[in-house]
Image (cartoon, rainbow over all chains, first blue to last red):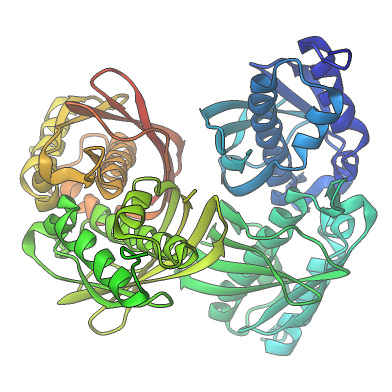
Length: 155
Length: 155
Length: 155
Length: 155
């Protein structure tokens, strides 16, 4: 297949989609810090407009849920791509349109205070229809801000 | 008490805090459409930057979770204010600093497609320590986009 | 089709499976009180062995989560059966083996105190792969004991 | 204080309450396999009456949610006892009456098939009002059956 995408090219494609084609990701200011099929690390900086609690200067709960949701979705998408082998970029990016969050649970552990934040995710269940992921948010001092669990439709 | 805030003044205070003092609410573009101690209705318009799925033009999952979280938090805060009678504006706005999301569950029912969106919330459990709320998101055609449940620390 | 099952026969089949072939349902003492494709009502009586809190004599949290899970699963299964038209009993009962809970959230609103309890469920999302349901538990005085939301794999 | 309970006595008290005074725990057949303030391990054997899926012979979803709920509650209770120092048995066992599940999320990863099962729990947030815990269920071959997260009112 002339169009076949190898693993490195697939990860580059994911990076491009994440950065260029998901408008709200820019609002949040999220960037992929590390990306492999086993390890996802998203980073975003503190900015005043992300604040929810004006007294404490802490992240809006919705920023926390949004970043954990997109981290879980990315992990779920990678679990699907892994099964698609050397399919084409078109096939792989089209597949993303079928990935959707079924549900999400976020547990808020500490106020979201920090200079920057790191969201990580891992897969709990990699089915051909449904993927379940776990996500964590830490600040720059490695305080544990929040955890989440998401179920994603992938097939 | 010269500083005592009656019900109408209390709702005006809540409206001010919501609009002026929670920066990320402006990013989301949320506005209070209706506000009483029994009924909360939040509205926001579709904007390109709120999009998550570039193929469908649907809301980012994080926009859905963020708007449902803030709706639930508002409902929880109102359940507390109701018990504070004619306390002062200072006492009432300080109390908000003690309201925090414990956890949140969002169920995504349909793609978030629409011209504008309405989030509503109601209280399931109004404790003096913990409030539990239920939230719903509909689009301008009254399609049911998502539901949520939140637990909030209030005391 | 000589084996075709009409709606009434399908509901009878569901009743039989529920009553005879799910051992833990007997431990819980649950019975189907009302069953249609639109309306599910499960009932169980208080028994000492279902108690969790020995001081209050209230239901064990696990009894609450178990009865709401089985109610949601039943609602999800009915949403599938509805799409199977006049298929055979064999096809319909085999389909149950594919129905599984993906995840479940239970919110405990009040201590589970009462003489008997009623669990009801309704469908929020009836997909061909995933169904999402909402469940409620009330006691004999119609106090609201708990609510739940479940996501079920159905296809 | 003549009635003061040291750590070892406190754990013995917890063991007694768990075993003797929570009737539904006997129905489930759960036993404390390991108990410290840092580490909780609950075990139960497969029995036919715990089955939900008659085709696969797998645990009823309600057995999974019940055992994870009680594991989380036990972890939450221990996090409270830790702060009570050498208080009396009466004070400590009375405190249990104030511990209640706020909400619970269970994610079902694999069918609950096995000879025996082990539930473990750890604390994510140890507040003086609310504790958040994470729980896991494995079978005798160490397959990961389910995970859960619970929020508990503790104060």
